[in-house]
Every structure is written in structure tokens, then in C-alpha cells.
Image 1 (cartoon, one colour):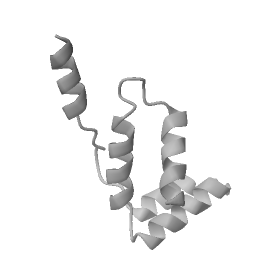
Image 2 (cartoon, one colour):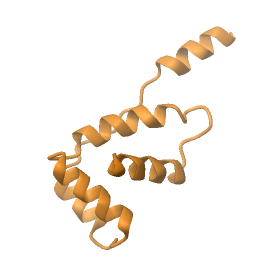
Image 3 (cartoon, helix red, strand yellow):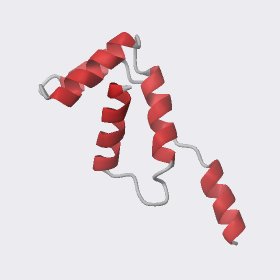
Length: 84
């Protein structure tokens, strides 16, 4: 059973439902003038959209499936992405 669980956890993938555009993200961040949101928005503009963000975020969050994906974990991953 342990090997099956390990296999399932290692091969599980995370995906995001629906479409999200740069304009949608701007709307979410419109009232947030914090440094992190500005850095993320600039990174998304440089990357010409959120596609790379969503792939990187899903890949990084996969590591947290065992311990839990919390708002803090997502915030940390977004900050890491925007600084890369």
C-alpha cells in the first residue's frame, strides 16, 4: 500500500480550472499596491501572460500536496516566481 500511495503522490498533477488572462489578474490585483503584487504583475508582463506562471506554480505546489497547499504556500510560490 505504501508504494502505491507513494506512486500516486509522485504522479499526481495539479491543474487550474478555467482560463485566466493578464487582464483578469490585473483586476484581482487592482486594489493591492504591495511590492509583491507589483513584482508579480511586472513579471507577468515581461513573460507576456500567465501561462508560464501557471505551469511553474502547479509544479511547485505539487511538492506541498502531502503537507497541504495553504494561502501562505501559494503566496510564497508567487513571490518566488516573480523574483525569478
